[in-house]
Image (tube, rainbow, N blue to C red):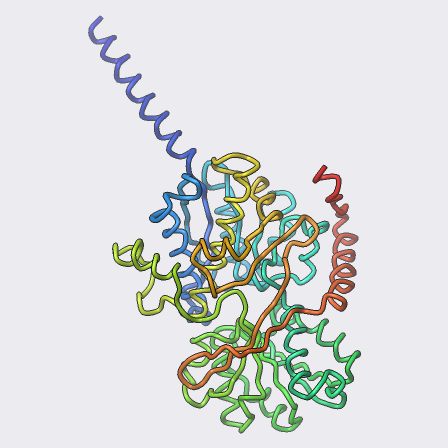
Length: 441
């Protein structure tokens, strides 16, 4: 009898431990982290991943999680390869008590590959400043969120900037603009917008693809030396960017006539070239280099406790800051969804509502510690991006200096292009547009 009572007591204790474990797990929100810390793109992938992971750690350490719900995460190395990215997506999508919260692929190629899967899996995909330009249209791309802008936005703003330098967009007639681009979905994305603007303003567009990973560009820069374009737009990533700048130096192409997209304007792009890269320009959006309150918090709550992901002295670099902002927007999507669904672990479908109702205004930015590092972001069921704005920063040989000009993409040009491209995708994939008004009601 005593033995039976003892066994029952043990069983009860095990059951209690099990239920406690379930309760503990139930208060966790799982964030998959697709990163690349190896390969040709590691110099750019590492600082972004460090910033991204550090912010998740900060929310746990400083705030106790998202409204009391602890963040758990797991990194998966993609090497910037689409097939590995898809493998990571498949491996991580079912993890956590409610499955993956959202994915941030940090690769346009991976984004294209997992977009089709998102409809069945009901998991949001945040592509802050990359991905599919047409995915701004939330009525077709119900799970994609190109927060902060797309490559059509970026290309449009660069054309506006060089037009301003020439004294007006009409002065671009007869000019030559060369696009030196990574020969991948990422590099090809801006072409449609640049072609549309070329028809409007009469400039000649030279398309110069560079094969992965971008270390061999002799033929490309020979063409530039022969064609003598008035401007070069650089759409590179990783080692391709510093190689382009080195080739520009070797061929004597003025760096002040070169303009990179926002993924071609960070410290790893110019540091290998150093003083010779002086005058090179790039778009900057979401987060410039520098430190603010969020960085002070990071040092206090994470790095001073020995929990930092990278080196303390790298806090505040361009890509580190962009990783911070990208993670923050994902976290705020969850926090926003708590309003509707309660302060508990949420499914990807529930988090989508939060991302479709983001309202990160100036007051929220300041409260979060990002004052000076981003502009307000507001989304809807129809518009999954929010307004896209950017500035130009220039490398002075030692640091990035943000210029006074501020640009917003021209929606009169972009909206018809987005709608036409989204319509084409919907037709091909047999997708019925969402009725946002009906969903809201």
